[in-house]
Image (tube, rainbow, N blue to C red; front, side, top):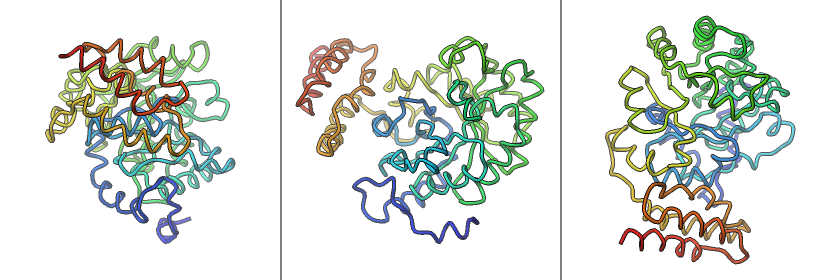
Length: 360
């Protein structure tokens, strides 16, 4: 299917729960030029964490930072018809969809669905080391077959004008990263990819769990810096072990185009995101986590009206006050009460009182 054919196809509005008709297309037009700019700082795609509730919270903390979905597999969308996985709010933009897969035709169809749903970027996962992902022949194992990855991203680009990007490791298993990574990036560039996010660790596909693969393989930031020098025209973001905006500043000063932060942004979202617009993007003002909690209340109410549960949202809010007075009581109260029958906005406000009273 050509881009021209795809552009003529009516949008399915998959991602617009409660959004006005046409809001997805308007949001795409407004945010498309901003995606590369937003990639100066991004929150990494994280399975079971960066769902739509998490992204809504993160967007209240930072207007500029690029947000990513959890990985959604192309087979789930194309064969399984699980288009509900594409649901998101227009308020999340700029937001990227990460896909997992290795079949060019299937990835092209999943890309079309993601573009129709309104995502500003479609990212191909070439970095996840889990056994489940490997069994589907996608994720980090694809570092062994850059030609196949090139075929996949070409097919994805053919069906949309939305940015197609890649997230990868520096290598897997016994590969020599200094040899493998330049060849991989060169293959991506040859396939028309302009933006790659690099997790600065190898992935061991056997012998280490996904959690261990996030910590045990040593970080090689210097190699990623070298890639930026060798591919100056590519937009390269660095990922892995980055725990603060001060560290992000260091990587940017080394010449990287962007910094992707994962676990630190999830566990300490205020520390990473509340000052990001001013410090990283040079715009806007810092956000107040107390005000962000209050801004979440209408979203909470709407979610409950639709049959959702409070803890589906509040589990992402536990780290909002990390390191601040009242943080422990905030976490404890939400953890103990958000799962109870009838829990709602008042539960969140009561938890918030532990913070405001401790700060008084």
